[in-house]
Length: 518
Image (cartoon, rainbow, N blue to C red):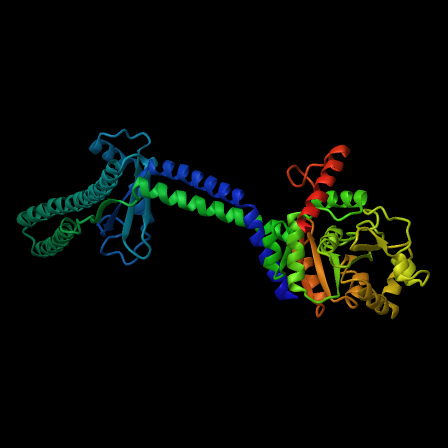
């Protein structure tokens, strides 16, 4: 059952997609419109990117003598500092207020490269501001490094000056002393001061000749956002795709909750052959005319098509056709009287047997309630011939008879096969109307009939039920499906005529039938 059930789901999905084509197109168009609107709003802002390689400088964490290089996030945050923003504002004549709102700074993973992005209303402005931020940031790093170097140089130079003063004092003391021991001590002190001065001068030279390269703009600013037309087009397509996905999701949800038969294609997608497509309003009008006239009248085109499809596929004569509903709880097939009436109009001896539980679909519609029928024949109270009611020259009906709780038991008994063999003696075509084909009554009747017709009611029958019927009735030959459109709404059936007009119409149909037969 897994395969057929999955097939029924696919059939239901296909049917819902066809029925919801307008909704699907509407959702796609709505998504595309929303995407276009979003694309237009995004297209109003262009984004440009510049990439800066950060070089280590003296006076910061990237000093050459530092073995532990910290994360570049600190330098990235400096790009967003007020000092850099002021420099950019001065260089571009742009107000500093809100200048940082379009700036985005990030560090490329595992590199010393900082990405600077800027969004502006125009592509030129975005490119110029991204480039200016990169250049002013490098200038800011240079100035900051120079301030640190100058400060360290001043401190070392002050220490050198102090040592020079100390050296001058020691030299003066050495010149004034006559004591040899004192002179020897002063000479040692002078030597120590000279050594310190030499070391300080070495440190000063190292500081002044340290790294002074702040880095470089490795990738000049370029516009990264696509052109407005491309952005709007891409957003429109993306919105349309999202709308399509939303429509598909809606259809899938509907299929999971309800996989009803709505179109004739839904029947064929299950794998069953569609034999007829009739309207219940046409069937009701035909039944009323049949009850009033008790004569063979005009056959509508859908019933002629149904008759041709059934008889072209089932050529045995006599033949017993079991006709049941695919709807649980349905009392009987709505089109059984129509098929029997169309068969009788072809000149075949036709018997319509009402094997339903309450006779609502056949007996009551033909106004035969209260007359003996199938129940009485099964109980042996009357013969088959005595139970038959003649409606037209070629159509007889066996009503359901009295209600009997043991009818289902009798239908599964040995006498049923004999009864239906007798039916083949008195009829070329026997149409046996039963209830839902999945019920035990219908299963028993399927064993004593030659073939089976399934009635599917638009919007009521389930695709899963059709699949289950074909599986449960196997190996009984399921000839196909009759699709019935319920009589609801306007334009689905023929308009009912007043009594006088109906009588005139019946006379016209009889004359037309006589002329056709002639």
